[in-house]
Image (cartoon, rainbow, N blue to C red):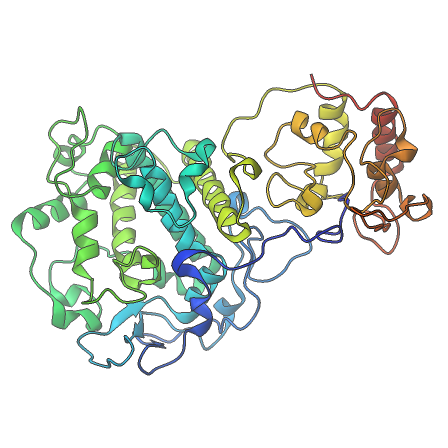
Length: 488
């Protein structure tokens, strides 16, 4: 039961382009030629064109949907291009403008994937995920394109390469991205599958990179071997927990984890990135921090890191379906979605709620009887009116306290109800919330004002009348009649 049909009282949905280097580049990806991406690599595919609508950051589907779908909990549905016969596997090729030298060609994921990632601001959100983990580090505040450090409620205590907690979050976040892309393109999961072993020779990498191969030095080879053999007892003993392993896999040469002992040489993540940097660091380069997730080799190296972590977990008796890991993956997904909304909606800090902040324990009539009406699967009010990006700036559910919902309703003006307020304590028949839900708004005598239109259709939008049941309407009416009290 939304008060606006996901936009009929003011368009407050996701809109605009992403900030920084993520603005619309995917739409210009071509086929062949200088400055373009062309399909390349082994194998035919049974997957898509990317011509259909891309999913929004919150829909979890490859196209549009009439119902909200929580991809953080249920996973993404396959993108339409996944079933197209024209999508390919392997790397696509990118030539910098004016340069078609096969020895300098860069490699990206396929154009359909690039387009989706740009449409959904993934490149920019990846930047902000890392940037917010440098807010409390000297010199770290310049990394963000949206001044993400203003959002103090989102800044994690664990900052980049300062703690084992950050090492663990690094592993979980990148696994979230890998899993999401494999869900979107299950027939083309090769795009996001890491090296099966640490690459030690030219034959271990795609043909485009073989002419540039240079042998590793001994410290890198030894670290790679430890990663490949992480499940050996002597290697497991080096890493007492997943966070310590994550620090080792993530952090730069010369960084040290306070309190860690017996840790091998640190720097694998950075030398793997540097291994596939082209001169000039192209628009889709693996070391272009604005867009490095475009690069095919990004997923090969991060997939290898993920493989090492999974082998470690198995050796420690931890399973992929462990509840803690599932919850942590959901938390990282929610954080990324919040960063996407900040980018696409140009949000201010007071418009953003930390999606992983524990909600207060609440009780009372509104919390126990009224709020479930807004959030159930029949009325779906919170599908349009959640905690951020809410249509008509009206929140009716989501990761938000019941107190905040009530505070946003009682004696507050409606954007689409003329002279009516959303909820008038003691008077349901003068409360736009009740009138819209009951299908009575059209005959309520709404008069347009300087600040509000009269949009009198029933909510949620329907040609057959209210979806809110008579019993639910009575509960809503009783709450208003009794004074529209907040939760305990």
